[in-house]
Image (cartoon, rainbow, N blue to C red; front, side, top):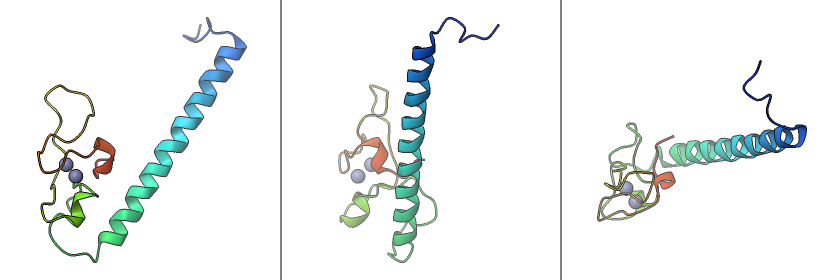
Amino acid sequence: MSPNDHLTDSQKHMRDEIEADLDRAEEQLRKAHEDARSRLAGFGGEDDESGAFCFTCRFTSHPCPGYEKPSSGGLGPCKRSTCRHPFLRHDVL
Ligand SMILES: [Zn+2]
Ligand SMILES: [Zn+2]
């Protein structure tokens, strides 16, 4: 008895499509981060190796060295006042 036995065939189909879409999106983002990381390899400055920096802030005079979760929880914008960029702009994947 599988936990999905209560789903109809069209619900299963919808679930599979959602999963496939999310997998694709995650893969693309992972790839974008990977490309950004290799482009930044020669950029200099700190945090080249450690990861968890903000890709957008790397080009400002006040780089964000890491994502700080908002106290409200969730994956909202970085809580650093100099950053405030969204979670996914950070090298956190
Ligand atoms: Zn940040
Ligand atoms: Zn930032």
